[in-house]
Image (cartoon, rainbow, N blue to C red; front, side, top):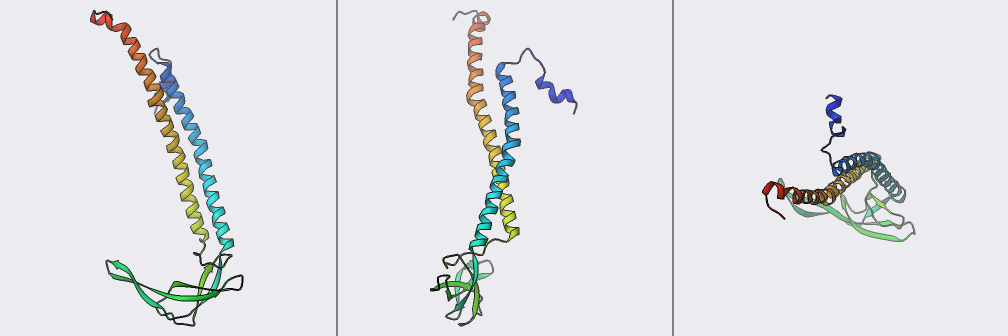
Length: 192
C-alpha cells in the first residue's frame, strides 16, 4: 500500500467535523491502550496462575494409603462402546497430625485389600488432586493470560464503540437536525 493511502484519513479536509477528528483520536488511543494493557494483563494473569500452581505444588504431598477392602466395580454411565465401569475401594492413611483417615477412592480394578496406593494430601491430611506438572502449569498460565489479554482488547473495543455510538453519533445527529432546520426552509420554500 502507498503511504498516502494509509494516511489519507489524517490529511486536512474541509468536510471533516470535529466529531470525526475526535473519533480518529479515540481509535489511536484505543490501539495504544490495547498495545500496553493487553500484554500487561496477560503477564499478570499468567504470573498469578504460576504462583497458584507453585503454592499447590508446595502444599500437596504424596502419601501411601492401604486398601481396606478389595476393589469394587461401579458402573458410572454408558458410553458408545458400552457401560463405563470404574473400580473404587476404601483406603486408610496417616495424616500429618498422626491421625488415621479413611476415604473411598478410584483404584485399579485388580487392587486387593492390604495393597498400597499413592494418594495426594494437603497439609491437613485431606485427599486432594495431584498438583499440576510444570507443562500443565505453563499451558494453563499461557491460555489464561491470552484470555485476559483478549478480554482487555474486547473491553477497550467495546468502550470505544459505545462511546462512538452514544456520544459522537448523538452529537452528529443533533448537528444534522440543527443544520437541516436552517437549510430546509430555503429548499422546501416553507418557513419553520
